[in-house]
Image 1 (cartoon, rainbow, N blue to C red):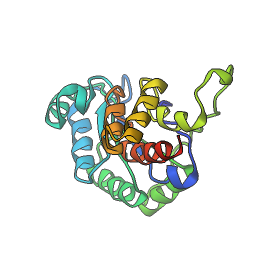
Image 2 (image 1 turned 45 degrees about the vertical axis):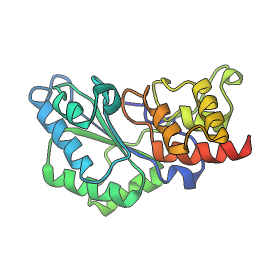
Image 3 (image 1 turned 30 degrees about the vertical axis):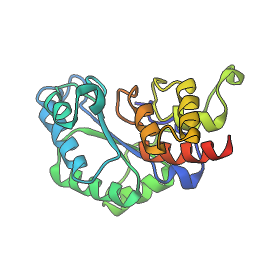
Length: 209
């Protein structure tokens, strides 16, 4: 799964952005996986995630709340949780080791930071995937400071124009940065949009423009 790999930003900024993904393996352990995936989300919720989501059914906003999201998890789902600090990542990894759910777990973030988190949790990484960047007519893309926000939705569901609108709203005092970030998160159906990070970026951009 590569939709969580395209986040860009400074080291300090990305050090507050970690995405967990859990999914079954097709033809191997799909049957009965829904309850295990739900357990993963329940573990995540005990550690105050920035966001959670289900790629098949949508984020909490789309499903009408966390309770509905949990109730609707099915076999074959791909579920996510976003955290804003490495210490919490370590604790969640430790709990997942104890739970032994038998599902594939991917943690996206700065590779060195994820490596340290895995080591602290007593784990050895199985595989490392890196984004090779953006290719082709990159001149058609929005500026980097906008991509830092839009790329937090790996399926490009957060449009650049909406980001510009939210920057204007924050600058004019029509919305708080937190409210603007929450609005941007709504179209990200997988639930991997980091609203805490987005609020920081929006605040900085509103001060610049």
